[in-house]
Image (cartoon, rainbow, N blue to C red; front, side):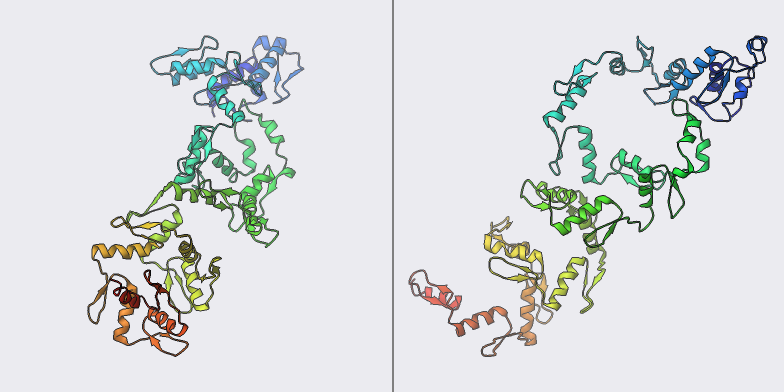
Length: 521
């Protein structure tokens, strides 16, 4: 910075001069030199200077000739004027007023109290509230407000009113701004980006907290410029003694607070300082340990208001609520399918790419999902961990048990829009629709017969191959179809499941019952 070396009488004049050469009233050690303050060689200065400088600034250690100069110096250093538009700070009100003209448009609305100008009348009206006595008191806690709108917002704390609701998960909030921030958890929008590492955040406060992980103290930080309204450079240096710093063992960065060091340590790979006392699993954040502990305790504090399903984490509840709201924010660009979760979309995309990264080490079958591989392995091991509490039937997959339970409850959620027939499974509805459309996508390569489902083709192929995989454990008879084996076993057991509604005769096979019914007609 260039200095004009004008000869000035006291520090206030020095400050005026420095403000002409510096940006927004900032100073450094090099520009605020006590030699400049004492460089006045005018006759008046020489007459008043007795050789002993008793007027010394305790903040910067500057010596001043006149006591009035010291008072002005202290006021200059302590007081500051901030621009309400851009938050720039200035050492003098006159400089601030001059700066404010930059923000004005064609119209100017001056404040009669402080002289500040505004480009809009509405801005002036809001500003005038600062000069008036707080006139909107809260009747509950006596807190007062300059604007009635702020009082109304405050009252929601006492009344519990939350007028702003999320259309996705139904969560309510007392302020619109909080709802807007919450919506980003559903959309995935992260408008606040770190300029250092490009990490994105849904809230500005999270970005500010994250930025501290990049902060470190080094030797050059104590000679950086500081604005006049903040702590002085001397005071700043005294707040960071070397012995009080916290150092990162990996990169050597130092921090004023231990919390900042812990946040910084997490930016290093595999930094997991928080451990589970039960199983020893380690995590990068304490909140993750709290969530993890629920896997041991079984606690599920977040409950769905619609179906009363419970979840261990709030994020899982939010995703679950999309089932009821039918909101599917993640769409496939290839086939227009949409999903409630991003992970489901990524798994779906593998169908288009043909990617099947999970393979069975026994039969080499490949799968798009790891869960499908886990379920497939149970076919080899015979494991069926999911049992029906009603009839005792066991299944390899939880989803299979869920579908099976509909046979007991009678729930048939999948309906045909043509004839109204309903089904327990979606796959059966798909097969059923082919009866209306005439579609037969499965063809025999031997005789060109076609079928509406793959199972029918498999059964048909046994006619050509002669395969009979189903054996009667009583007489060792063989059958190509499982249904034929079941009918055959009724001969041994004497079971007659088909009864005539007219005469109460019973039969082991449905065909025999139909033949019998003709005797009544």
